[in-house]
Length: 211
Image 1 (cartoon, rainbow, N blue to C red):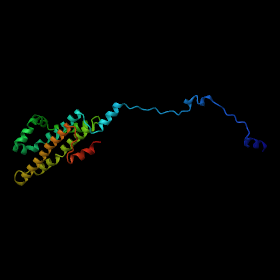
Image 2: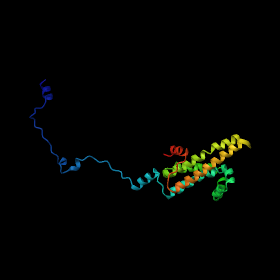
Image 3: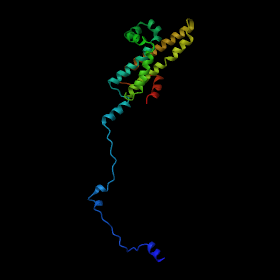
Image 4: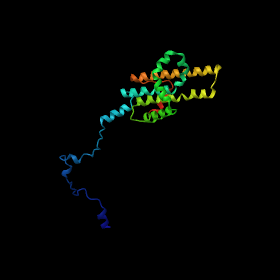
């Protein structure tokens, strides 16, 4: 019991406790008192600028040119809807006459429209290297072309030869063609000026596809 008492009894307060002084912890060596710092990653200004440019709606001349050209795609693909308007109105025929060689080249191969669609969607819209301005305008042109499926289905379903049905189809075709023509003029001219064109119905669908 005496031995246990001596082993587990608390040391007297008067016991000599020596404080060891280490010169390494002195103020003369402050480097040992500081915590290790996390290395700072420096992002190049050029990369930051490129990322901001890709996510913005600003456009340089090359972006404007690419965006303006994209609006020719749905117009070329839906030129057949203007067969009534072009023959009846000479000014419209004179307006689009310079585009006839490009339209013939576009229509020369049946799958040109589908190939252009795949190229624009996967090479431009889904490519983050292009600015958002280019991707948004390209997506608007694609959505506009996809909407041409509906008048085409109506014509294939009914295909009237005369009477009221033919008049309705002529009115539908002329409306579709005029909308394509206005979209081409509005979209291309806005892109040439560096503005963001927003087509009715089309713009909302394009926004959902472009992050």
